[in-house]
Image (cartoon, rainbow, N blue to C red; front, side, top):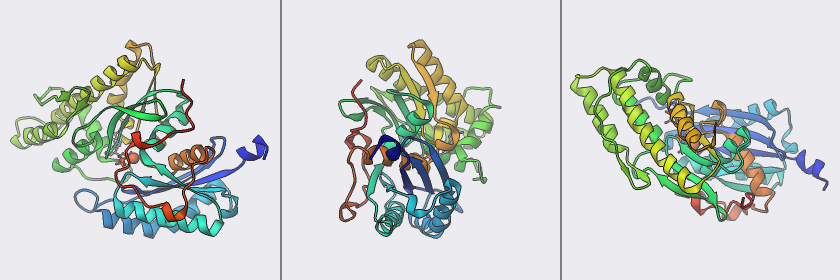
Length: 342
Ligand code: ATP
Ligand code: FE2
């Protein structure tokens, strides 16, 4: 097949690791033709895995056909089906995997299992043009600093307990903030933080290259409940402390790896204050700084479709019989054959 013909080929990617069911369509040369998502919003509290999975099963059909319409393609135009194989919530992952297996079997095309964390990194690289970045991947379930070396995305530092997005979400719920459509809880905290002025004393916990956020979360909730500080001031202080901690770890990894690019990806990447802090340290180390565009920051099918292209074109398909989901599939266990050692 000629290079032109190969580039015209299409991968359809399915994302279902947590609260979103997403379908993306990518060409082999990196054009994103569609990116459609439908999120499950819990009535109260955090994500209930089985309820989220039921939501995914209910919307799968609709999201799939919307993505095909948006991409202006027919099912038979799809050459590869990719799905997020892990890490994530078991029932949610299994729902997406079932849809992907059925689709691949029906279309008689290969199946590719994609690591969700690698997906966040690869879509960040595709959309910003970063080639070999030090990446801060901060989302609802993950907070880690990674960079490519010796065949894998290695983890240089990470949270020892809860993730940055989860910390903001739990605080927001404790503060009685509601999950409004189109506005993630982390974004609600960001808006309130803009009006905060006073720094509330809160824990700052960096241990070596890792960090801990659960003590900070508890202290922020307690500070609010005591009523001595305004919600705006606590949001502001929570952000300042949490973001400074991840920025410190990112800066140390940058000094160590001497990478020339810093990339921010994952749902929390949308936060302007976090972006500003990282831009400052990148500039101090003569590195460029880039942020994944908002529509590709939170979980999306496009990142799975694009990583599916990278994997498939490097021979990484998965037989249906071996396509079991991997709930705790760490990013540094994935061979990224498509990245060349710089
Ligand atoms: P993972 O990638 O670990 O599976 P996830 O499915 O929760 O986790 P994403 O969709 O990538 O991940 O990110 C969602 C998180 O991003 C939520 O915690 C949400 O509050 C947070 N978030 C979104 N917008 C903002 C913002 N403007 N400021 C801070 N956090 C934000
Ligand atoms: Fe994610």
